[in-house]
Amino acid sequence: MKYKSVSEFKKTVTTVDIFISNKIKKIHPIVEILTKNLSEIELIKYIRIRPDMILASSEVTEGRVKIPITKPDHPTAVGVSLIIDFVYNNVQFFEINSTVKGYGKKMVEAVFKSLPKNWKGIVVMDWSGGFWEKMQKSYKNLEII
Image 1: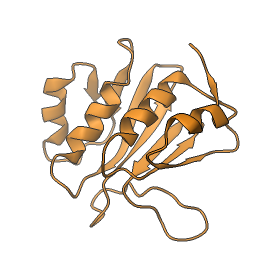
Image 2 (image 1 turned 180 degrees about the horizontal axis):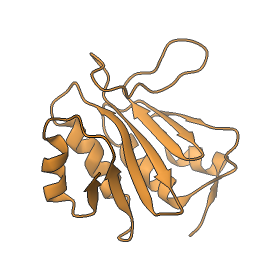
Image 3 (image 1 turned 120 degrees about the horizontal axis):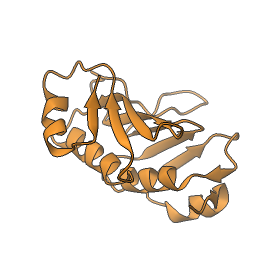
């Protein structure tokens, strides 16, 4: 796997505002692919990359530090918060919100088309009322715990 420098990576994704933690010096290939796929969703405008997490959203919080809004039941934001576990090869859907029909599925698709075959998607707490069960029919490597 080829890691990219932060500056090299930022040149490849130009359609959204990307904020990268100062702790990150090289971008992991899976983070690169996840970020690119999420940035291709037309409503996603902001992505923040942390050492073990990606947040992507149509809106950010107010204030000096701009955090993509992924909170469930937010009245206007479309966004997803992912915890990435490189040791156990999984991506946890920590938060997801979609005020526009169909965009929850688009975000899930963007994640799963980014993952290598030996990786899993994990949902720890499901308050969706059936959304994740529908997604599990399409993605066999999705676990609902």
